[in-house]
Amino acid sequence: MNTDTLAVEEPAVLSQKDRLRPLVAGSVGNAMEWFDWAVFVTFAALLGPQFYPAGDATTNVLRTLSVLGVGFLFRPLGGALIGAYCDRHGRTRALRLSLLMMAAGSLLIALAPPYRSVGVLAPALLVVARALQGLSAGGEGAAMSTYVNEIAPSGRRGLYSSAVYISTTLGTLVATLLALVLHDTLTPAELADWGWRVPFALGALLALYGWYLRGRIGETRAFETMQERPRNPAGQVLRTHPRAAARVAVFTLGATVVYYTFASYLPLYAQLQYGVTANAALQAAVVAQVVFMAALPLFGMAADRFGRRPLLLVFGCGFACLSPVLFGLLSVSAVRLGVVMTAALLLFGCYAGAAPSAMPEMFPTPLRSSGIGLPYALTVAVFGGTAPYLIEYLSAHGHADWYPWYVVALCLISTVSFYRYEETKDVDLTAVEDDERGFPNTAGGE
Image (cartoon, rainbow, N blue to C red; front, side, top):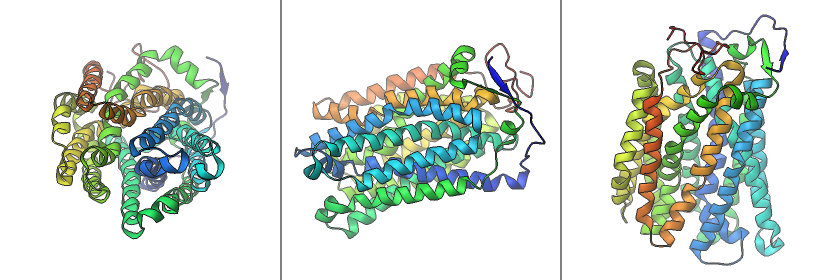
């Protein structure tokens, strides 16, 4: 291993009472990051006419969602680069870098001129902005998961890591609430003309505030006590931990499609396919997201008590069996939309309470963020990023009933990996040596 050896002085140790402040600061920053990301999907129907030539509503949405997909394509690069930066230079520095990139992307969208003023430069600027946000989002997930797990006390990593999806959902929820406020206070013409810029400008400001907060939190003890830092963490992961990296990808396969379908895109899908009004769809989403956030700490505690594997199996088997049923319940009723989203998100909670702690536990400290970053971001880009476009494309061609079976197939593949996964809830996250399975040594001597 080609490494730089560092002289480590007395490490900064986080006491029990010192853990809450960095957890909150990191979570607030994560919420602001995902607020910016969610705003793009929430306002996709309004962005199409602004950045593309005139066309029908479906064409404009498909064009905008294709740009959403381009943003996702940059997530693997962000996962590799920011993941490596996190392992080389520290968790907090990586978390601040990701927020700066997200702020830049949001500000660019807020200020970008429309197609009628600058022609093809408008969609080009939109692609650049989404590329910046894709790089940011690709690194944020791995850095945030690594950070909260490393500051968590022994036996409570599942509870602490539930903050990852709590803050992610909070950002999405705030974006949804802001959309409701704008729809209620502005006329359709005002919203289409300038109102859509408001959430992107606000998102840039919030991301900068998150960057400030993250500058006030300390580094993790696991990183500070690390005596060697790899020159090329991403490459070393692929050489020395290919099985664990592949496991992260397969873990993510079904979950990313489920999340971007039921937590993100379903309100817009209900509007386009069933005629549910925008306000009613957004209200249903708010209720589902609040219930989901409230339940997440319980799922995290369950993962600490019973292990990660049982919850992951419940998630995988549940969606493999129920995805067609959930889609079959959708109709013109916003109440049904709310019920479907709530049920789906509660089932997804089994994954959200277990996976953010299970994945960091698969890697030793010097490679932890890189081990998650690239395979996770690559899977999200290929499957999560294309999910909204795929469901809209199939619906536009009269094959909407195919999509639930696509979800079933991916969840079945993930379930096989969950079944073969060996429990890691007792691993020692300060370990740097690996056993023969490619996992960190366990505290209990598995």
